[in-house]
Image (cartoon, rainbow, N blue to C red; front, side):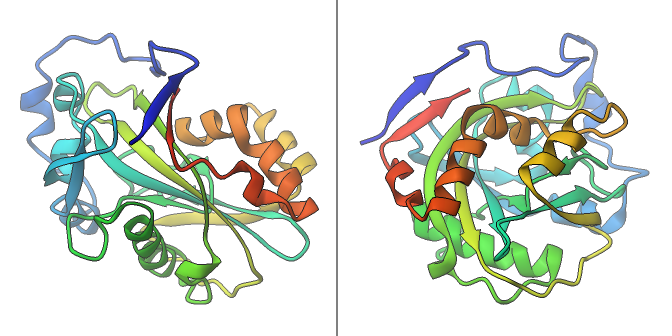
Amino acid sequence: MSRTTSSDPSFLFLAGSAQHKDLTSIAMSVEGYDATQVKLLEEECILLDEQDNIIGHDSKKTCHLITEIEKGLLHRAFSVFLFNSENKLLLQQRADEKITFPEVWTNTCCSHPLYRDDETNGVEGAKNAAVRKLDHELGITDVKTEDLQFLTRMHYKALQGDGVWGEHEIDYIFFAKKDVKHEINPNEIKAVRYVSKDELEAMLNDKALKFSPWFNLIKHEFLYKWWDSLIAGDLEKHVDTETVHKL
């Protein structure tokens, strides 16, 4: 049984979320978007209630439309934070081609378990999805499910600001520490960078750089204390399999 906590019941909304126009007619057309990314919108995400119970499935496109988010549609996601042996975090900058939150900096890999047999089973399913997407986005094949340390789940909402797209997710958060080889998929990722905590703070203070809303939430609530524990070797003390943090 899951329990929920909330530090901000109103959730997080980005600029532009108050627009009230005919969003359906805008969103139903994906003309002008990258063809590969449009095809990925056909993937079936896992629909949830607020306790993270599976209640169905729907396309990635439907799950990310503001019109559906405002009706309460909620889906499952994951976020991977991968560190090297120097305890530096691998960040990615999302590609220009991405339909949701293009060009923003974020954690190593963030995507969705799909509605299929090997990805619907809670933490283990999310791990399988993470391994799949680490390969797809970054060409990383060295990270296996056993390398991923589950920490907790986060329920959040964020609108992109264009009046069309957004996120409403329960996000499974994983840490991993491993030296890996990577070869980025340019349709998914524009750039990558390993950073120390000080280097990350410098990036966050650079007004020219934008970070994803889910990264900002995780950074504010959890990241640095978990990072310290990763270095100290006691990360497991933060594992929380019960709580869904509503942020």
